[in-house]
Image (cartoon, rainbow, N blue to C red; front, side):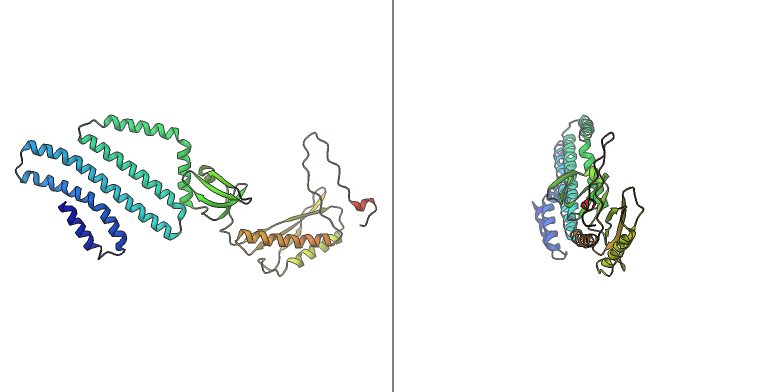
Length: 338
């Protein structure tokens, strides 16, 4: 009790000189009780021989002080781990790295569990129990648990890899393989992705760590690369007019990087002539890119339909051995307007 009172007075005096006294005072008050208990153990071990106590009394007191000392050490260690965890969480919150808070919380739980087991083993050893068999059983049980929870361990290691590499963060829009969505949560086992159609998808971190990730939020610009297909029988003069009209429509647009977009006629295939538009849009926002892309596509489609050219029908995959579909007939072939 005297040590506890002395530590409290020292805490009150030191907090006046330490910056952020509120946090420091809270931590020191939490440590004061186990620290006073540990100090009492040290004082008891020191004063035992000095007061002339008998060997039998000192042996019994030594047994009690050893148990109390291990309990006090474990108590102090748990308080220190709590303080370090809270400090790390405050720093992560200040830096905006909220996705790493789960890993810190998990690490704190693992450290506290390990300290509790170690303290319990030390107390059992002080009581005279043979802890060798218990330690061996814990090792075998840990191996069996690791083998049984192989997928869980794999997801845990994958989450550590994601949090260290940081290929994406909460609130960023990314493409994971063929899936496009916004990251809402990064957990220790899985992450939650909000897809473009509004559904919430939960994906294990082991799959995300091995997936091809394209981060749309972090890009400085966006690529606009549509391809228009016209029939191979189209007159060259009309195709030349279409190419010139597309270039004139996109030239001078402030949203496009460079003087103008590149509009080129590519190598023709058996039944179509591909016209590729290649431009870079000055935006990193995914929603803004979709809006600009829609506006540019409508502008180009109006140019195509303003002349006599028509876009070729989409290619239809034919299964082996199946009959080819009938060609789409144009009304102009039946005597209508060209």
